Length: 225
Image (cartoon, rainbow, N blue to C red; front, side, top):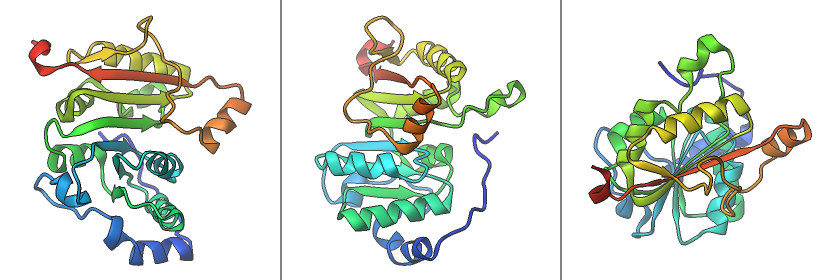
């Protein structure tokens, strides 16, 4: 069961050019072997994974603001990939790499265990209809996979403006034995400085939507059992 529906979408001429010319620079080719992030980026800086980056607005802004970290963005929709490539070029950003594939497959095959300093999942599809809830990406098995890829002390950060989905996410993460809630009252957190506000978020706020930030830390492995 996939958490997304693959839409064709229309590529602009600029996005087509970006996919042709810039993908060889920023793109991660498919494969079955785990990536060596130090070789991919040419340095040993911490790696942050963003899942489902949409048009990449938050991605390039985070990378620009935090050059001491490396960012890997995963997105299945090619127009969004093309848009992010154009922004990386326009802003001279070099600490981002992109995977154009299913996030679960990427995590399973390409991300080594305990290699990530953080995971960001911003405004995932809430699949609001009850019969579609099984498509929601934040489920127990997926969270266990994420936790296995996080370093000790790394942070999983999820944000949503759909209140019922926020409740679901909180319940799933609270049940994860390898994660602990960073909220002082075991609920939601304030938006951390590293998450930029996006046009999508501002639109939701104009509609009266509250944004929920959930931050969970990977427990140290010696403390997990």
